Length: 303
Figure (cartoon, rainbow, N blue to C red):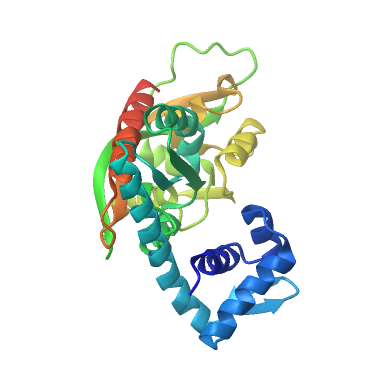
């Protein structure tokens, strides 16, 4: 099998479209289709089902996809090791971040990565913790920052930092920022209309679990996936939100909100740094993990 053909097939399968894959790979769509077809002919299997909405892997395609990701990962690792011989950390590292952290960490992390590893490539994706765990297992990600990581086969997770979750309310016009409002109990929060992500968002699941532990449940006004959209709706008076302080601080207009501590009991969430236990980390990935750890601890402790 040709490595380039495997790469093309993986990209089409992941993006679900020859058109999107041709753009991402910077190759003409007819040439891309021809290479994938040659791979199918060689393997004597239909790997993709082509339809008006795009392309999806067949059962044979799903099986090859699992192997192809591992093969391409090993090739990247070999290239990195060869680069190390000439004294440079090289290769590609794919990182996954929760949407609430991506705005805070992406710029400083990218800047530090370029300074320390100019010969390496960095890819950053946003996703829910549950989804990113799957991406770690199937090789789409090398490293992920997860909220409230649960034990999972094939995943190694180490604690990164704990964050307080806060009640976010719209700030009335003319209200000064100081002094901060007094803490609110979790039971009181449960009675407020909340604009909150849908399941299986890790923060949503954590809020429900903590409220259930004290015998109450959240009052859901709207289910919205996306921190920016949640904050827009809170500013518009649609309800309240439960988010980390850094999610509000990194918003377009943090002064539009009042952030209130939650107590009795306090609502805290843990961020973990996760990798796949099936694929040993390369030296470049190890160095990147230390960058993620240092950047997250510095940025999140400062907000």
